[in-house]
Length: 262
Ligand SMILES: [Zn+2]
Image 1 (cartoon, rainbow, N blue to C red):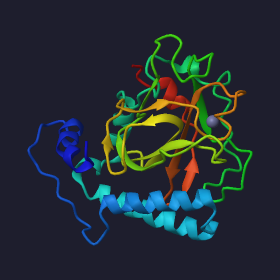
Image 2: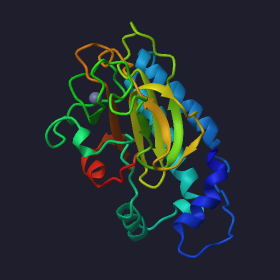
Image 3: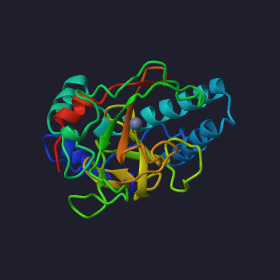
Image 4: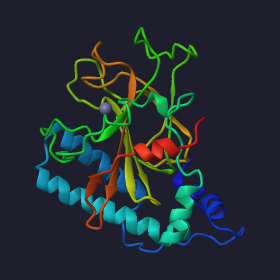
């Protein structure tokens, strides 16, 4: 579903009174969302290939994020005060990102697989952190077919948002760690979701996805995820966008615990 098409539906979903009010976009001097997606796709590819200096990447990233924030906040459904926003987050806002799985599938005892310290999105050489939760499927023979269902395991969007960028061309032997990934911007949270190691990716940049919508299937793509030592899993990261447009990782563990299961 294209993101423009959903705005009226979202409006009705978010407002208490059904309204026929149409969404009016202001800030028309800003680039279109589609072109911000293209910029993000290009930037993240350059970061991965280390063809952009970290400081330049930071500046480009924050420009894109400030643009997205302004663009979405100019639309009525996303102009929420903090009370409305907080109550929205309490009412089944999050969807557990693996169909047929629950929080038991999260790696570590109490989500301790998350290590946010030292993370730098803009410097691909910085390693050692893991600002993410890994969520494992039952796949003993590592063929990406769920041993319980005999089918691929569906990855579902944690929250609604616009798909900014995807990778679909990872091949074994490539050193890129994320494999086939998806980046989604949630304008309500003003943050980014990153889903990595996917097999099939079913969304495209510019798509609007609903919370709980299938976006991909769990895979083993990515340098480490492909190795036999790695059980098949989804790598899920959330980056909160700060006032200056720069990202800071936030542990999504409590959100995973409160998420609706499908
Ligand atoms: Zn991971």
